[in-house]
Image 1: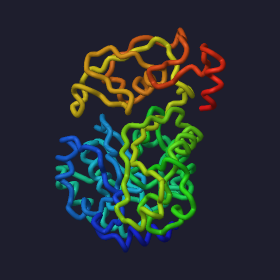
Image 2 (image 1 turned 90 degrees about the vertical axis):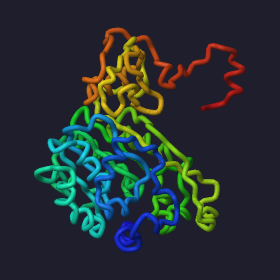
Image 3 (image 1 turned 30 degrees about the vertical axis):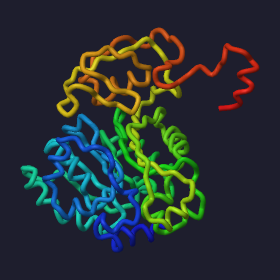
Image 4 (image 1 turned 60 degrees about the horizontal axis):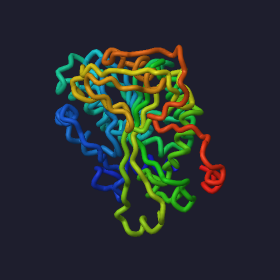
Length: 349
């Protein structure tokens, strides 16, 4: 399948108009500052974009970024502008033809951004073999990936490598395609469905398990949208399978707990991020309005305090007293104090 993917993205696809499904179609609303940056990119780079999400989190200035599956470089160049000339971006991709496009615009993009020298480097290689590319362990503040991990046969290894390359407190912020159940062989082995990111899609719950196994204790869903398959033949093959484009963020924080625990902590967003002055979005369940005192679980507290977001918040409380499970993150106590007969009738899960 890897050779099929290389051919598909290297030779078969010339622009996003050649795709046969809409899986590689970013549905997230693009903020103004990202849209403005996109306008500075070379048209050829933009035309050869095959992502499924917006992998541009907040607070990027000065960061060292790794783009896994950078393709022709749209996201890599977008991020290289947003991190500024004191930051840097490394893009990795296994398709030579895509990298040829990306590399052809290195000097041009530096000039478009007003940089004295380019802050982008492109490396040819497979994501499962990041340890063979000379990348420094704990060398990156942020790792992004846009609709590429589904194309990797060994997804667990990719996540383990990403964890190794992130510095403590760093994060992996990535968009990919997921299914509502495990994908059957007839879909997984179909060349077009696989190459267009559906055949290799993880069952969402398997992603949670693999992320935790790799060391990312508390995966957070940021956004999601359902994918439709407009090609009738391919839709019939997929049957009842439902696919979703989803963006997750994973923090490399060793102290995160398996569940959301309540320590009586709270945070206050200062409103100091220019791109999110009134409300900071951490994930789908956590949006922090400027100046509001918001109770949070221990994991959310640590994600903000131990990451690049610390200076944008005030923090209240510590972990000296544990109050049990934190229901605000969707966790519930598994024990039912009501009628045992009702509990039995409810069944498992």
